[in-house]
Image (tube, rainbow, N blue to C red; front, side, top):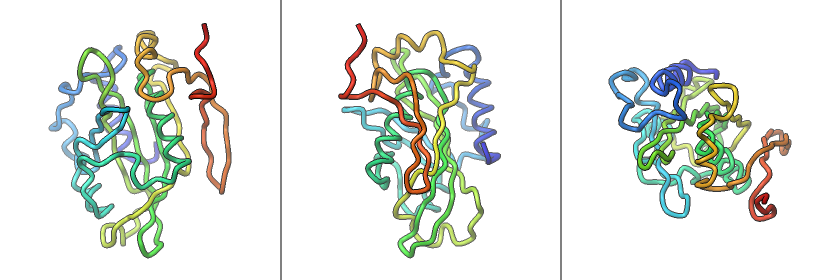
Length: 210
């Protein structure tokens, strides 16, 4: 993690989590992360596995020049990136993992800024992970960010990190309720247009093992 905000948010989330798969949504106390709240957001899983912003910090909305609340997390990404993000989010939700994204956002005038995004799982109902606590953080400190809307974004890299070094023992139950691809197990590195992706096998081309 490159940014102080990502490090602070992860450390707080991990301390609340303890030895569990993930902390509960209502255990997150905004006052404990007050200094970084403007860069944080909450996502929720909706019907058809759609992932939408439930809350988005003021700095995020100001930097991107848009109100994120109620919009899809997958809006503004090219199709290959949306697929990669769906796979990443699926694994975060199935295995209590941490998703770490490096991305480039582009303004209508073609100016570019690098961001780091963090995705942390939260349980909300029925002991299942259906919320994500996250952050969007400007990495390179471009002074013009916030003066013109950032209209598109693209993935540079993404990682899945397990806080305990491996999937949590209770993740097997969640695998039966996966929001996107239920049989992700391995990843391979794919490089395209100077970008690097970790691609997880699964989906319609695979059938579940007996």
